[in-house]
Amino acid sequence: MEKNVQIGILLDIYGKLLTEKQKKLLEDYYNNDLSLSEIAENENITRQAVRDNLKKGENNLFEYEQKLQLMNKNIKIKEKIQSILTEIEKIENKEKIMQNIKKQLKSLI
Image (cartoon, rainbow, N blue to C red; front, side):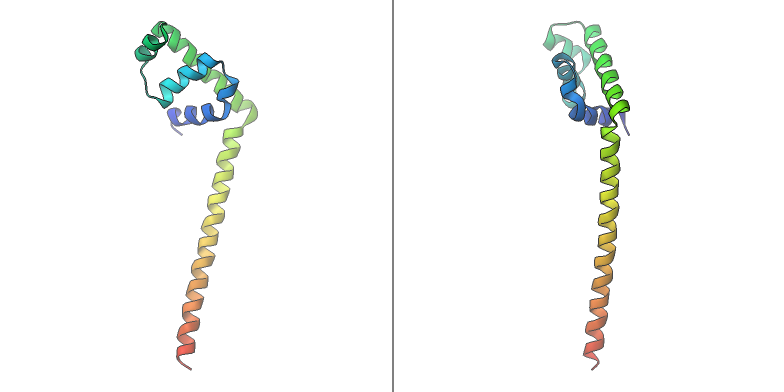
């Protein structure tokens, strides 16, 4: 999974566990697609301070995920749901085929 997507998902799950500053900077960088310079200017801090806060926030998100595995569990649940939906579609298709065969056989009587 691409890092930007991964950070976005982790931010949705664990964002409230970060400091307000880390959360805001991560949202601006990953969700609002602002550059380090733009964020630094908006926040009245240095570009290096933005980068340091982003790295610390990212590390916190990855640490939370490593310990709690909420994103991983969510992905596995979605994969299982998709698998079940695929199987249901197969059953529905077989039922339609059986109904068509039944209609054709009845028409021969």
